[in-house]
Length: 342
Image 1 (cartoon, rainbow, N blue to C red):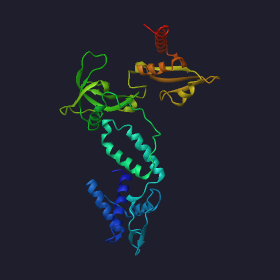
Image 2 (image 1 turned 30 degrees about the vertical axis):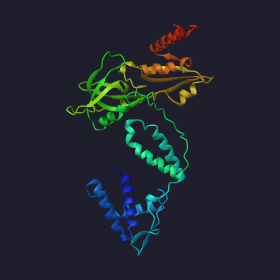
Image 3 (image 1 turned 30 degrees about the horizontal axis):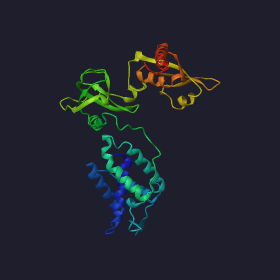
């Protein structure tokens, strides 16, 4: 159990003891009660020193956790609350706490339609009730992109639980290019969101190559307990280190990109780097810049660069420059029709 969690359990135990006025509480008594509670939770003896309980009492007396507990010593050895009705669980939240809590609830509510977060709904409702009773309701300040109409969101919880519990999935999947669905066993590693779409990343049973499945293309999900789960020693950070988006390619498709960004868009690209490898190569007097980055040449990077339209110019490599030129040439032909008809 984490150290800070143990400390909180001790605070609550000490608080409960000091609310019991039917007996006297010496330091050894508090140690015994805290040890008993931790034993019930962990199933093993936990050694608690006198120094730990003394520091706990000192922390409870202070304002660091907002308790300000009125703990006094009488008869030189016993502890009690000077206010017999005091409890650390009844402390009203400060305004700054309420502000943070209110905004956190608004953020959580944006995820409440995901089946993955169904278990949070009861907690969210309780928090909303507490906030409503103690503060004035306010409009959310932070808003996260969330498309509730995305296909496949109802599968999120099952996929999440399978990854968490290391269970092999039996998935029926049909990509946009496939004529018919395909069913296979799948070892899921992570759920990844990109551009407001969700993907299941893992490995098909019997294969070593990592696969990325769009969740909106999964038509059915079941589990297969007869197959042993294999995490494949998957490391998220390493796997995606050279990729923008979700499509990870081989090392021979890794390219060094240099592009000129006009002065109007340079601040946006500099303050929100396209990729962790991005670096500034040159700054022009008019504010334009040349930046460099090293990524896989996948569809996602092409779409990103296309979105800048005439605001950027790919200088290197020529393969990407030619690809972008062809895309813009096709776009020009589409828009060069006066009547808009094809």
